[in-house]
Image (cartoon, rainbow, N blue to C red; front, side, top):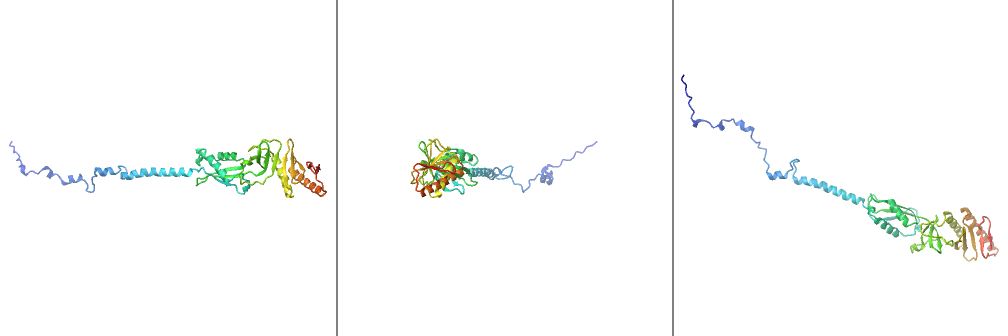
Length: 309
């Protein structure tokens, strides 16, 4: 069999492989014109997750921290307390009942508040403890309460005084202001120079041991003395002295310009105090009309009766 060799095409006329490939094959792998390569510098400026610039991302984080700091500082400032309290008397309280001025109460209040760091914050302060300390320092105060301001920083202390009733003078303990319950409030030497207490002075001859905060008389004893004094003042009878004799339940009273004294029974009722005072006034007027002056005493300790000598 005869075979014919295929004639070889001259190399100069053969197409290059690249020219024979379909142009569509290149279009599949072509990069879109809208996509632009990111340079390393630009990549460093963007956050990989959020697509935000790094400086904006850091600003968000530190902005939250700054906000938290501002909130904490504001809260601490709102809860802080001054150690300089404001003193306010309870409404309706007469100023003559206060045995110290406001400056003295404020000074002691400041000392109490400054004594503990816990008193400088609205959360940690103990208002009851502060009130008790102030009341202990000033027995003449009937009630003390501490109020915390909602927006301000200065605490308010409301005070209500006991009602002074008389002054008792003891040769052993000195003179003390006594309230209507019979409790010694404070020594007269501690009263401010401007104090003008118009109170009856009772001399104690029983040797009572008197100091601030102790009860030295009963409330009935004080009421008895106050009522007798009031009855005599209502009839313009000036009292020279009041005395509690030793070992008795007696009140001895002297009036101006008379050589005698009057004996009252303090263990009687309050109504009896008025009755005894009324008996004395009637006897005094009758003796003066008769030009009789007792040399020693007038005794009205028995209700409805009077004896004189």
